[in-house]
Structures are given as structure tokens and as C-alpha cells.
Image (cartoon, rainbow, N blue to C red; front, side, top):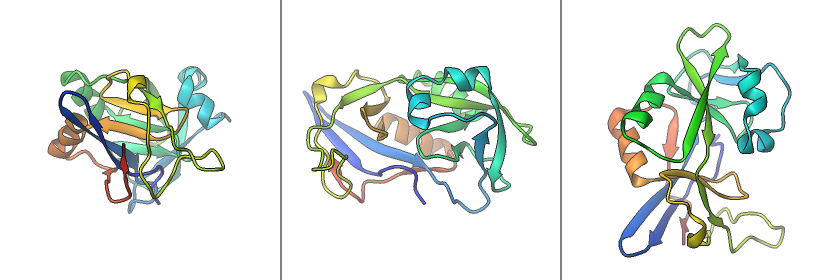
Amino acid sequence: MILSFLKKIEMKKEEKINFNTFSTIFQKRGAIAIESTIKYDSWEIAQDPTPLIKNNTFKVYRGQKPLDLIAYCECTNFAISERVKLLLEKNKISGWSCYPIKIDKVEENYYGFHITGVGGEVTNRDKDDCVPMFKPIKWDKKGWDGSDIFRLKDTGVKVCTDKVKDLFEKAKITNIVFNDSYSKLK
């Protein structure tokens, strides 16, 4: 099960800039998913992770194998390995922050991932005010803050530039999907 919409988006300015939606894979064979030891609202944490910064203990929800990206037991948030953190820092990728977390029975260092970059507002929500799933998503490009990683405003749609996608693919980062087979954002 893929945890978020997977779409390829394009933005035209003076040059063509390609974007990709991305997601962790919740049921990748053996991959762990984690849950916090405290109750929280996933959308509120996506906006402000302070409760998880203060209470940073997690337990394995399912699976046995920690990969580079680890899904939380809800679809909005995830953790990254130290390898991913260092890769993002070294390449000066913008639009994110992180906080250390402790995962019971996992020795490696992991970090809760917080997307700080903002994309524009979706301008073609459906009649139920939801983001379209199987047709192009239109969004206000003036609202994009220029970050390499961002969410479309007021949605859970996670987006990155081709710079990030290429970096992750070259480094063989595990448990992430970039997919343009559903639609394009315009």
C-alpha cells in the first residue's frame, strides 16, 4: 500500500522544473513501520512536530527490517535514517528539518522527518473538496517557496524536485517510491 498520492508534476517558469510526488512503502516486504508511544493527530504533527520532539520514543508496529525511510503507522509522517539525513545535508537540500527519535529494539539512528517547504494551493479540488487522485492536480505556482521538498498547501501531497529524486536514486535510498504513472500536476 502506498501511503500518499503518487504523481509527476511539472512547473514552467523560464526553464522547465520537474517535480515528483513521493511516498514511503507501508507494506514493503519485511520493512518496519513504527508508532509513537504517545497519541497524536497526524495532520497536526505534519504542521508542528513539537509533541514528537518532546516524546520521541517509538515502537515497531510491524515488520522486522529498518530501511532508509520508515513509515509511521499513519500516512502523513515518516522517519529517515542517518544516511538520508547526511545525504540531504551534504547536498544542501531545502524544505525539511528533522528531530532524533528512538525506536525500541533498533540500534541505528533515525530522525522524524518534517517537511517545511510549501507549495501553492490546489486550485481544482473535487466537489468534496478533495485533491484529485486520477487526473492532473492544478496548483498555484506563485505559492511555491522554491524548496526542494515541499507539500502542496493544505494537503498531505509530498513533493520533491528532480534534484532530490536523482540524488535518492543514485544513493539507492530504500523504501521510497517516486511515481508519475497516475497523473501530472499542472
